Image (cartoon, rainbow, N blue to C red; front, side):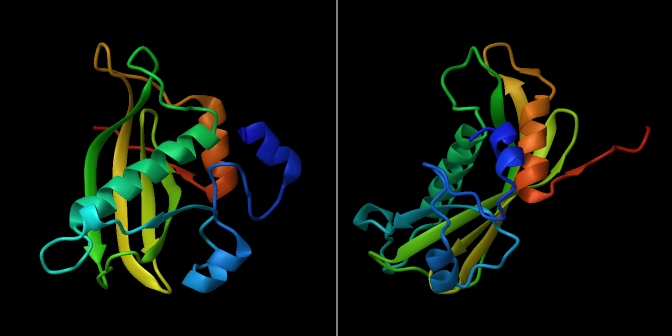
Length: 173
């Protein structure tokens, strides 16, 4: 769904092919109203460590997939290095509780702020309550020549409309 479509519908919760956040999932996992995009996962055997907990790498995989689907939903599917896309600058995660094999997981994503070429996305991992909070700061870049690019206006509109993302202005040097 493009930003134009969001503006036309003006729905508080957007359900698209990639956005799996429904009222039922919101209630089941106790997700707050400030999250509008989510994706479901199940903890697989290969994601469980020797202590029977979902490994930290699984969380980052879910977050990355959710970010990529969020961008695809905005009209920016990641296709190849000849098209600008997000490059990670920084990531972090705070774990509140552990997950075990076959747990039903919902990962929510939203854009917190945007600069000219960078943006911060926040994430939450849910399984009948909050499991973890995470973030990623991304640079919009053309991978083939490693050049920063301005975030496209329609993507900015999508992030502002869906999430209330704010424009971040850097102070002068």
